[in-house]
Length: 242
Image (cartoon, rainbow, N blue to C red; front, side):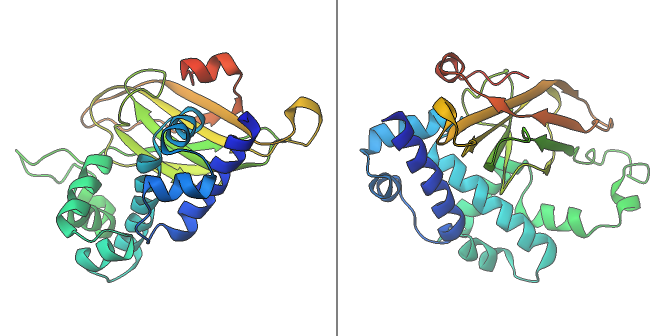
């Protein structure tokens, strides 16, 4: 049963990436996985560290950030493109996940780096957003797929991530506008394994880095997160320290 639900989660994540523009509901995902809504949500959260709804939202916002940076679509058009029927809901959720509004994100991405860097700011202007750059590394023998990266106040994914993103595979990531404070960067993925012995079939892999301390006017050093296989005890505790 554990292998079956893990494979189902991998399938649903792939479906999210292909159909994030559609009105996907938890019931739709659970039905596609072949499990009850409660069981699917619980196991999805155990494997990825966040709920299906939050995982889908992170995928949508990654596409929204790309469109805000690279396209001329307005915010309303981008909202519709990534699956939101309400511009207000999209803007509110985007700010909750990234720390800034879609319009502010577009201005930040299109601004002259020297202008946005801070030394030219007038007195009383808000500090420039602090991004965190990093890289997720997977074991050479693993075939890791989608990776969820989140910023949490503790070394385990409890509650809502302060900032989050989803990668199609291990690699570089950016978490925009990291708030001041002490944070842990946590990553979780599902790997197809090598097909040998007990490790055959999808297996969750996890990793973490922290704590990091963000303060106004101070750049954050890049972080490297190395994924490793999660044992059952780690999954029960939702521990992703690294």
